[in-house]
Structures are given as C-alpha cells and as structure tokens.
Image 1 (spheres, rainbow, N blue to C red):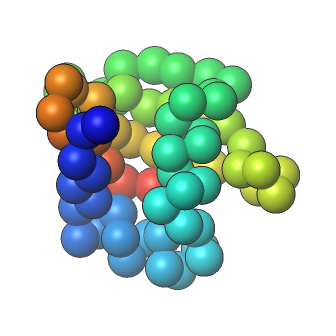
Image 2 (image 1 turned 60 degrees about the vertical axis):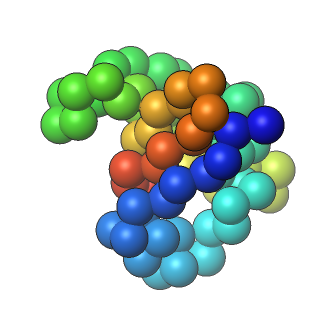
Length: 73
C-alpha cells in the first residue's frame, strides 16, 4: 500500500471543507471526471462525490509507493 502525502495547502482546504482522508481516497478511486492538471504537471484532477454525496475535486498523483495530494476543492 502506498504511503499518503498530503501537502499543507491541501490539508488546510480539507479542514476548511470538513473532508476526511477517506473521502479523498474514495473520490480518487470513484471519480466522475478526470483530466491532467494544468497548474501541476504530472498530477491529475479527479472530480467525484463522497459517500455522503458532496462533490469534491482532488489534484493528486499516484506512484508505486506514494499517493501525493496537491490540493482539494
């Protein structure tokens, strides 16, 4: 299982919106839309709904040993 690295800005946004690590992981796996990030080369933008139905965007990348979250909205 890859380790999770959440950038400080992403962690702040998660606290502001009340989004948990588990919800971020859920959206990353069960997304509605995906595209390359224009602001963060090598990262992907995935947009989906949490199990509670909230729409969330995640900018992250998954490599063999690390899941790196850049930002959340």
